[in-house]
Image (tube, rainbow, N blue to C red):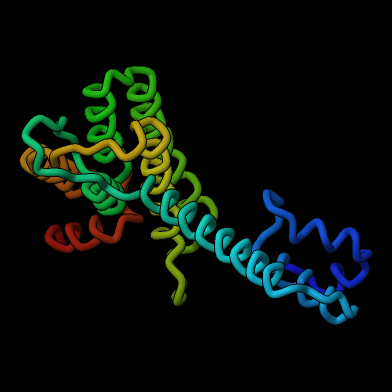
Length: 221
């Protein structure tokens, strides 16, 4: 956020630097510097005004391109190219982690990384998923009272952290904008079904804070 009052304290020569090509100031700061100089009776020719506006526009376009580039890093680049590598999608990993614990998501992501020959990252992913599974149980059962009613859902917040952690690992360990074909859902379904069975039999021990596990547990009642 650009503070106009801060810019007003600068001298004319300092403000002129905001209008120079190649400066690192944000477009809003350039616009304010231009307006302040005009307020101080600095006379700009039409050519100079055009150059300033072009500079501002270029900076805005550069910022937009940067935001688009950052968003692309997090997006799945699924393709129909038969030569592309087959991987489990990030959405599949995220959803399985939210609903069935970070362990299924960690397994799916580690399989992706093994295919990409990122063996150390694959091992780290499995360790992260396992440790976070234990960690979230400790945090939820030790620091939250599930007997009280609240509009907030602490368990979903903590569970989301694990899923987001796997998503971050995926972004950092996978080559940027890697086009790939979506792997079959068969193994993820089997993996999640197996986890659902564990939720059914080990609800109290490990899964009592999972919303889906609570639903599954109702069938035992």
